[in-house]
Image (cartoon, rainbow, N blue to C red; front, side, top):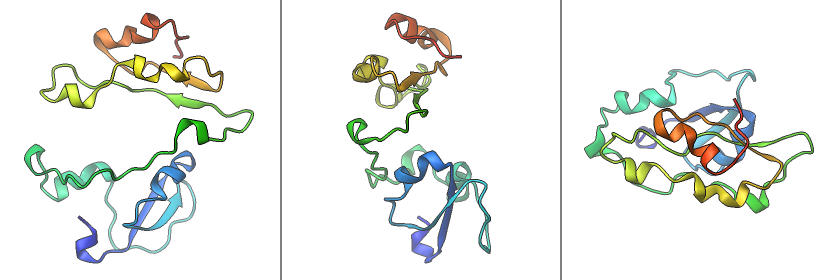
Amino acid sequence: MLVQYKADIIFECQFELLTLFRNIEAITQLIVEGDPLPDFDVHASLLSLSNIFCIDLESVPSKVPYLFPKLVSSICLSPNSKLKVGAWAGNPKHSNDDTCSVDLQQFSILFDIEACQFYSLQVGDRRNDIAKYKIFLML
């Protein structure tokens, strides 16, 4: 939506997310969190854009996909790095939860990979998903 204003979009993210956001054509400049920022006119956090653009559930832009993650098989982890998986489910009371959440079993291909760490960030009944699939619980 910012593109329609012909804005130069400078996006700051964690180093680990660079490859994920690098493929978004609308981003003019990608900055690693903590690096010096270039001059800019306006700052808005990513999570505040829906409020700025008055977006509600009925008006969510639906041009998808907008993220193009790498396949797990193509991720090159350095010897000391880990692929961290922390959230797989949202609020079970949300009316659209069936399309927002996935069963942790969907990640089963990663369970036996030593470089993958699963962290339970879930609340309620889904907090126990890790124990259900006998995955080491990281806190």
